[in-house]
Amino acid sequence: MTGRSFLFLLASTRHGGNTEALARHAASRLPSDVEQRWLRLDELPLPLFRDVRHEGEGAYPVPTGAERLLLDGTLDATDLVIASPVYWYSVSAAAKLYLDYWAGWLRVPGVNFKARMRGKSMWAVGAHTSADAASIEPFRGTLRLSAEYLGMRWRGALLAYANRPGQVLADEDALRRAAEFFPPNR
Picture 1 (cartoon, rainbow, N blue to C red):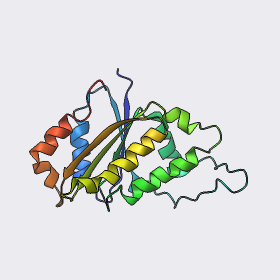
Picture 2 (cartoon, helix red, strand yellow; picture 1 turned 45 degrees about the vertical axis):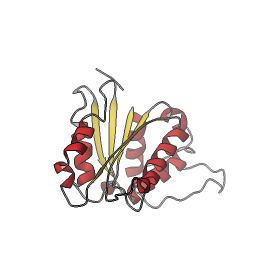
Picture 3 (cartoon, one colour; picture 1 turned 135 degrees about the horizontal axis):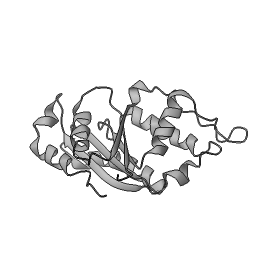
């Protein structure tokens, strides 16, 4: 047993879209003893994040419901994969909202979120429609900087051009890169 546990956070509103197909192709190459958990952010709705750190004592309440499930899944994983299409140069609204909740989890008494995230690995998978590589940098930067802030290891982004549904599955180069994205002993 490797002791590795991957949490795949599907942050698209399209089930089975190009981003999910690419992530599933990459995950299919993980060793069989690596645990995989897949959560769809659109099936775990979170209210808009409310910043209350300057109200009262600045503590956030203990999460419940979908928020608790996401917090526990995040803390239980050794490897976190944000599978989000590139929307307007960055992550999807669902992925951004999930990341916004990290600000609250940093301040939930007894959770020790930052300390417990330190040393985990973060990966990104996404489909995009831009011919300009520079326009994808905000996507990478959002996730890389979030990982680094918490002392996580940024493992990179697997990105592929795909506009029409299923297009990524016809891209041999993208599938080859996906097959090599998660090294077995990393």
